[in-house]
Image 1 (tube, rainbow, N blue to C red):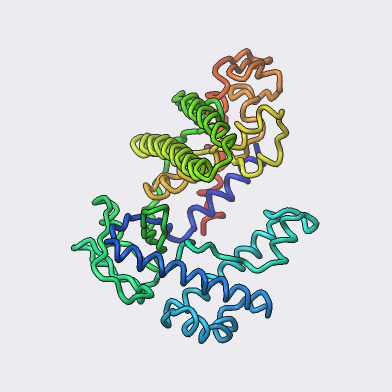
Image 2: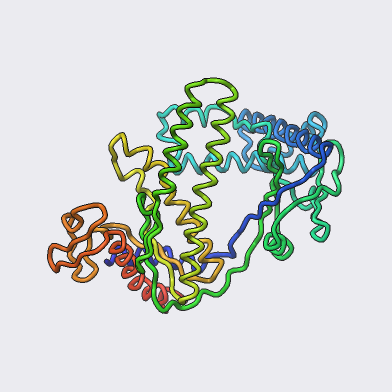
Length: 404
């Protein structure tokens, strides 16, 4: 329990002392055909320029912004038709891409140095897709909230009066909190602007108790209150999509490849919607009952667990990380206390007597303590154990010695 308390303390204390949260708001652009053509030409020009700057950065080992900008600035303006500020944005885009690559290499996300993926990453310059997203700052992009239009720089001149559509809540967030860059994104024949908003953190209240949340595959989330969010429908949907993917892959045509990409996006959106709905309901219950939310820390579970071949597809598509992210940011936005606790033995430990044994869980859905006889649904018992660990950890988090 001491290990669990220390781990939860670290996560909770970081959350309490963090800076204001960043939230992205995506609005749909409604350009005319002429405006859409100019936007597409702009994306292509900016990404060609970024790929060129990336080649120079790789060849001359210029990974800092000032050095690279001094080397390629004139070429980006003369050769690719960029004005001053878009050229600066293209350089920053390249520098950020190499910084991200360096971080991934340091974290081991691209495999060991001997792996093919690692060697390719360090042996070739970063290339940008012709329609990759492009950042615009306030010098290149201005918002007219009342008219719901934007004015944006393009290679064909300033495109004024480009309409956008969003909900009233999104518009309110944009007006109050939008700050920094906005990304221009093209998805098929649709256009979007993804704006960054700095949301001030509400004061985190003192919880009267905690809601422990156990995440799983058959049951996506189970709370210590006994509320169960089953994953059967999502599982059936994924299996149906897998059958359709197999049929399309057998055709081996360009049309089938395009449809495969669209199906993958649709499946991803569906899983995201399910996680949004679950996390929104859990946070709403916690806020209404003045309780906090605690989940298990499952950061490296994919590396720790070995599975049979027939289980690997289901496990790799398990959206537990996204559900945890949704719970964390929704809780932070609502001022609900949030903790991550140690996940070890939460489904094997008896919350009444503390006895921990693998035999306490004779079946996936059932828990039965071999010492005191406590029995019940295994996922609910795990949620109760998460809740109990959060209770102990919160005392340490709010102690004067840790919170000066």
